[in-house]
Image (cartoon, rainbow, N blue to C red; front, side, top):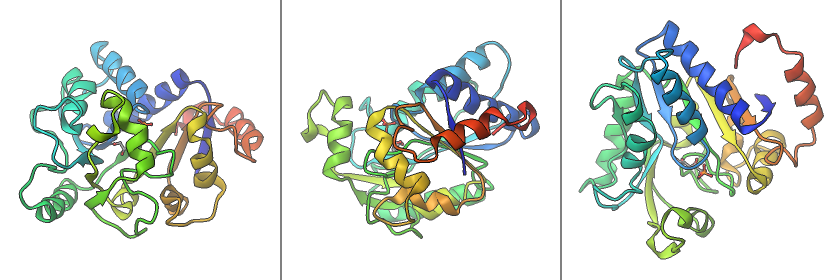
Length: 260
Ligand code: F6R
């Protein structure tokens, strides 16, 4: 696990560099796309680079991490619509190249199985962008999630619904209770995971992710078992790391050619 502590702008540029380099050698790469606030700087940077002719997504594919259950097809907070708005429509993904779990399916269990199969059929995710919840979730794998889980229906914690109420006029009652999410094992199947976190509200979850024991209580800790994880933090999110100075000096000494 590599930990980089830098400004949000530098972190977004680093993640965009990793995606741009990947697409340069593998134009048909499969990208894992997170929603929420954390990846927005990365998406802005990718849209800027696309407009400048530096990167193309024409042959790439995208798989979303998760989706609310039951939000109307045209609801602005339905994750399919959020991803369309924040990244897919701003670059040159082919129509239907970005998929998400179907939170409106009549048979949600079958929809989850279909989603897992679609990821496998696409060859698996090459680079997964992740955020992290203040309760340590990745995707919507809330505390107590099986470390071996696959895409399935989950119930959101009160903490997550409170955190996400800001997207629903500050009204927790408008935040759906259920979601479909890639499981922890699904996320772990990605070849490279780039997790970005900013702000003090994430500091405890980041402390557990990087320095805690692997436990379903802090689901993101499963990433300690992944061979290629880049954890991108601003100083506030890194503020509870015992090893922060070590991470800073390691990154300062890293050769520029190495990338994430
Ligand atoms: C979003 C997702 C969630 C968020 C997490 C952090 O697709 O899977 O795990 O990444 O809730 O959300 P933000 O970035 O809004 O703080």
